[in-house]
Image (cartoon, rainbow, N blue to C red):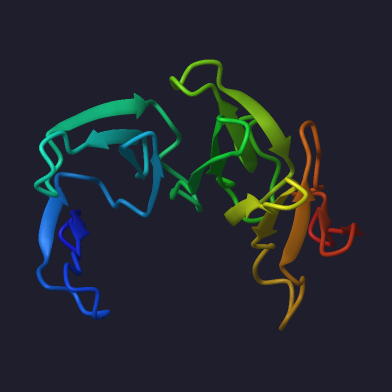
Length: 184
């Protein structure tokens, strides 16, 4: 709430929080967090933050922009973020539109080096893959893509895709199981 990241410590391990502590505040609609090498990464509309608690008091002592100047407009503004088993940072950048051609940077999954440099499109044609992760046994990357709206009740179905480097998953020209989008 209030554009804050909260910590709910459970010191006695009874499954109930002992306290509610504000870890960090001042975000613009934070929507996703991930952890890597002792830092907390927070995705918000236009950037990704890197936070650290260096004193162990469950309050962030540092708050630095990790990746900036991300799209913060259009239909899908939130950023799903995660660290891959390859040590790279991955981020969903959803579509601007619902059923229209997109800029090459939108409707994509991006991959970055561990320091936030070297950003590149990893996969495209994904309207809004708000959930993704890796199978720890096969190390294959999977993502759940929210499909286009207003094409009919229950149509098109959302997709579970095996995401591959360089893959194009069809949006906006295809919906569902590679069916042509009737609006384009």
